[in-house]
Amino acid sequence: MSLQINRENCSSCGLCLRICPILHAAFHEPAVFSEKEMVGPYYKIYIAHASDGKIRWSGASGGVITVLILNMLKAGLIDGALVSRMKKPSVVDAHIVRNVKEILESQGSIYFPTYAARQIENIRANGGSHAVIGLPCHIAAFKRSEKLFPSLAEKIFIYLGLFCYHVNEFWYLDYFIRKTVKMKPEEVLEVSPRRNGWPGSIQIRSAGEEKRIPFFSFWGSLQLLYLTSPMGCLFCSDHTNLMADLSFGDAWFPSIMKKDSVGSSLVIARTKKGSSLLRDAEDDGSIILQEITIKDLLESQRSIFYKKKFVSAARALIQRQMKFSPKKCVELLPLMHTSITRNRIIRNLIYALPKNVLGKYAYILYKLTEDS
Image (tube, rainbow, N blue to C red):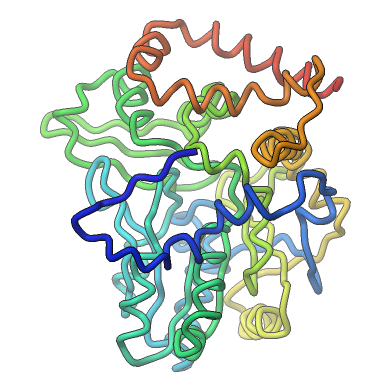
């Protein structure tokens, strides 16, 4: 792992190292952990969606987060919410929304790095109460910052967390536009988040044309192989956002996937505040809730089992606890993948490979890991 530091702006205060969740996970969290630990504490687990059809359609998976933000803003519980938006191709912006228009415009999921921690100082410096919507690493960074700056905790009303397998390095956007969309990246004016029904699509627009690409054409073999992943994601076991008040993910159930084209979310209520917020939204009719079991959750999130072995192997290696064997070498392949794709020559080779070759390799790795 290597850190990129802007030497001109660095004051050598060490705060970045103290709040970085990835460094903590890599060096200080145990290499061996269970699926139960990856799910974390909770009160109840639900399948949920917004009652408003337009909000539900415009979200990535059910529009529940949008409804909850709108409800909190209307009730005066928050003055703003930290969200992410695709500002322009290859630029993701973490910013605070403060009105209905901005909240609705921020719907959808973005699968690229978002530097939400840059807003910590902004939230500390300004008045008001905030909701923070983020990935597990974002919320972990905020929580660690709260210990250093108690005034930050006073400015945050609630944490709404997103499930995360991993994000993609920005070179993948270039690959996706060239190989899948069949457009020239330099001509693209807009890349939308994933939205518009479920599992949704990504809209790519240039001056001359506009295309909508189904989500599963965007997320496929390269992601399963971790070729597009930042290296830090291989040390993170927090798939379900353990530190959030409420955690949200796609309801990947075969029965739902066959019939739901609009969108449904898995929601884990982890705190009393989160549970209360959900119940209030159900009582006023703005969301629909259906309670499910932990077994249902694990069935829906099979990637937990897949990633668990890779993260355990990566941590064991960096913590010098690795006992090498053929099985461990297989489990270290994703870490090797994300390491070699930092090299432009390797990325050019990936560009040249037919997609079916990568698909076959992803299947082989999955079977080898399943059997290990």
